[in-house]
Structure formats: C-alpha cells, structure tokens
Image 1 (cartoon, rainbow, N blue to C red):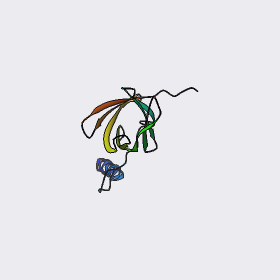
Image 2: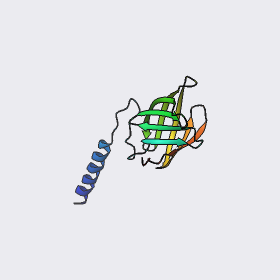
Image 3: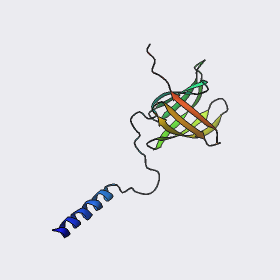
Image 4: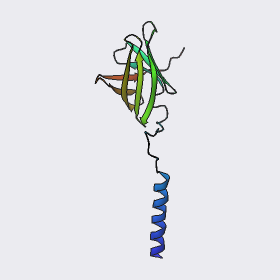
Amino acid sequence: MRKLLTLAMIGAAGFVSACQTVEYGGPVAVAPPAGAAEGQWVGTDGVAVSTFNNGNFASNATDTNAKLAEGTYRYTDPRTVAITFTSLIRQTVVQANCAVVSQAQMNCTSSSGAQFSLLRRAASTV
C-alpha cells in the first residue's frame, strides 16, 4: 500500500511538472495581474500623460496634449513592463523597463540608466 501511494505521488508530481514545461526558443509571455499597466499614468514631473492600451504606448504633453512619444509595450513577467518607444521630439528610440510596484505606481529605468516614476492617473468624472 505504501509503495502504491509513493508511486501515485511520483506520478502526480511528474504530471504537474509536465504541465509546466515550456518550449525553449525565446521569452514566454506571462499574463499580468488584471490591469497592471493598462490605463493612463502621469510622470512625477507632471510633463506628460502616458497611455498603456492593449500593447500600445503613447505619451502626450499635459499642457497642450501634443503627442511626445509612441511605441509598444509587453509584459516580461507579471509585474514588469518593457516599453519601446520613439521620442517624437528627439527622433530617438528609447527602451525602458518598469516595475509595477503597486496599482498606483510604476518605477522605470531607461536603457540609458535614467530613472523615473509614473503614477496612475485618476479616472476623470466628466
């Protein structure tokens, strides 16, 4: 009976590990927590509003609403967002990784080492 129980546990462990097998060949998309980055975020400097919408990224000036940047983003794990965007003013491509530290804040580091934070913008009640 003990051997049967041991074999059953080994078989169950093998089945579970087989269900988690990942094919090698590149990064695996990981589902984010619900709404982790989706929505509008304001930089702590107050200069721009950044919008994360279904893989598309855009940043607009808070005073004129002029588009400052556009690009894409993807989740590299449930709480990390990789952004690649073009600065429309400087005509340069920028990459940044952002850690979603709470539902209200992301801390980011660009490929050049610049650090910045984004705060979730409250939904307008117009």
